Length: 325
Ligand SMILES: [Zn+2]
Image 1 (cartoon, rainbow, N blue to C red):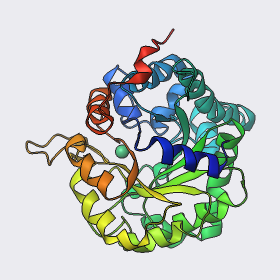
Image 2: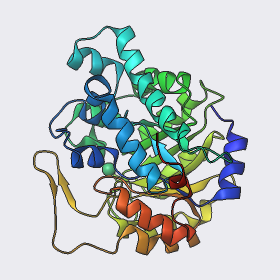
Image 3: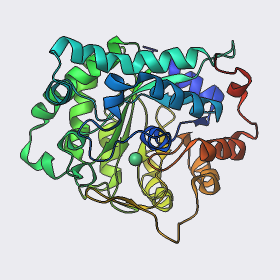
Image 4: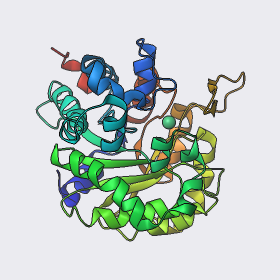
């Protein structure tokens, strides 16, 4: 696990860094059936690890500087329940998410710096599979301590497996943010980013102001960045604006919206006729607002990440010079 200071310096020297897009989206584009699966993309750790390597490769070929592991909806209890495996095997599977990503980035090592691997941790609501990662409703019934108990084994596995950092993603509530901020202290060598799901241009999903959420993140010295993901691209600018006064040199913004299409837990994604401006178009604004980590979430594939990279870095994929073997 890279130290926070080293990673901060790396982002400072090389930013903005390009994140990948929706890993599950790319896996589905290649034929994986994930819709309705309680483990979502994490099932492929058990059934088709090669598909995960291939999807990681395609984002790296598109110029991603950081890729996230397939572990968003992975948990020890989830693997035990839905794969009928032992706790030990469940741990191994979770860790294998990091190993697969690290194997893949190694093939894209330019000799200067290999791409980084972020160990993805979804909210407790992702395990519930009822769309509550976009409301945070469950947090009202849970204590910070209970949320820490839930997240601890996943963080432990991802850190032990050697993730460069942890990505807490689509976090819908202040309480869950408090839980992960407290939990991080138990893993003092671990760096992370904390990214919220949002309701509109001012509030995170549970209705709290984004500024409050940023203030919680600021309690941690291990957070490299705080921000938003899986929201429509057009809410990012007002959200970052609302918290502009809280920005500090030690903590940048991380931004990776979805395509702006509508999602429903029963029906899945609904393609709308009129989409708002796209991530590559809006990325210059976010960069001016101080975003250092920019990418995509659901419905964002490798082609759009390549476009984003050209837009922000003016180069096409230095990583692509190293063809995956
Ligand atoms: Zn998403």
